[in-house]
Length: 259
Length: 306
Ligand SMILES: Nc1ncnc2c1ncn2[C@@H]1O[C@H](COP(=O)(O)OP(=O)(O)O)[C@@H](O)[C@H]1O
Ligand SMILES: [Mg+2]
Figure 1 (cartoon, each protein chain N blue to C red):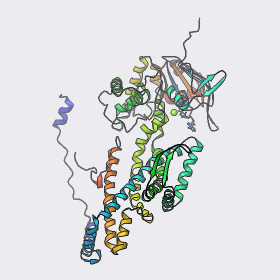
Figure 2: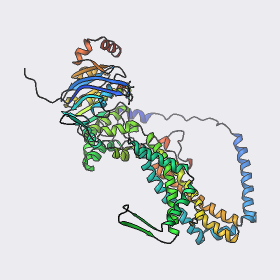
Figure 3: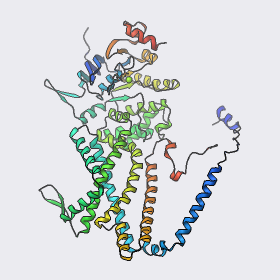
Figure 4: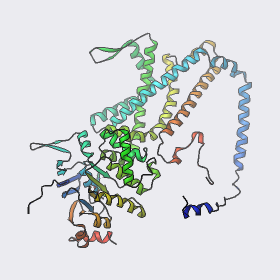
């Protein structure tokens, strides 16, 4: 069998991250292929958010290397030397990666439509009319066609999170990062957000999803990673990992979340 | 559209509103009566005591000199506040910079200008301005491309504007910094994740939200500045208080002229309060309505059925 020569969307090699003297990531090796949906689970404080934030350079790696779509994150390689990227170069890279946060982080002083239009206009220089048209289409896609003029605080958590997804999609990212997108939601609102994410996965988006929704991981995820204490303890197909965990720590964690 | 739900809503009987005897507050009536009596005594004394000489107040309230002084006070206040706010934002942003040299310079600025009396600064800058009657702005040692060449009054006025403005910037920088820090870190992160640059994030995301925290104390600062400019009378800049002092220095009618000045200061501070209300409303876009408050306490939530 020949190795397929597809560039992974995310490739992580020995990624370490220290906060001061606290080692939060202790050597993460991972690959996410284009179109893949990778779910990441693990106890609180295990470094899941930190790893996600490293991928779009919201955090600087301490050691190791990270590539997104074949390009080094945060550095440029010249010969055998690494050169740090300037702020605006980092910002340019981030346009291609969408991120959805646990607490939505919508801009409260802008309407729903303005939230979605903001980055295309300010970052890509898209014309206002065009950005609005696109925003309305995206809002329809996440089931919020009737809310463009509402302010974020007038929406339920589930609706806010769907706006946040539309806002990220407006930049046409090739990779979407989700950091516990449903953890701040009331239970009855979780489904509507997962439905939008599921649709996104079916449309072929590459996604890295930190979540505790085992049902979603099992049905939508192509791979599942269990992290604990800053290392990847176990990874594989979601079904295998969930029904037949190999490590004690995985078993213990799954025992708690699958009750 | 008639769904079973809307039918049901239409047929529902509105709930009966609560009818109850409200709590009585006899203390309030006693206090009100006492205050009313005191107010009547005050008004009586204001009108009948000849020391107030209301005719003199009327004579000078709209006199040319007083109005000229009033205008100088307005100019001085507005220009100083513009310098204060703009420079204050710059210093606040420098203070929050990741570059240690830049943030130290900003800290030193606030330390120096808050640590010395504003009157000293104003006199200092006026002297500097008078010493350089031909003031030039330009590339150091290079060609000069802006000239101010004039009699003494303009340099004194410029010195006063600079003195008040630079001093105000030190205070404003703290207000702006507090405003910026009050904005949730998640906002910056979300904007960074969208690929926005630091300056754009500041201008589009952080400052507009910080405004809600910045505006009320800035209103206070403006009102305070309006009155602080009366200190400029020591350098005879021709502001309202200077003019009033010059007039009563001549005719010795202290009380009525101080009343004239007070009336104008009150009028200006009232106008500023109204302006502040509208600016605050503009920047509360998307905020929780209960926090939006009303002008002079009107527009508070009402009980009962909507
Ligand atoms: N900015 C930071 N400074 C210091 N410590 C941090 C910072 N961010 C996260 N940490 C620490 O790193 C560890 C992992 O955090 P995180 O990645 O958020 O875990 P998870 O998302 O898996 O719950 C925690 O112990 C947390 O306290
Ligand atoms: Mg987390």
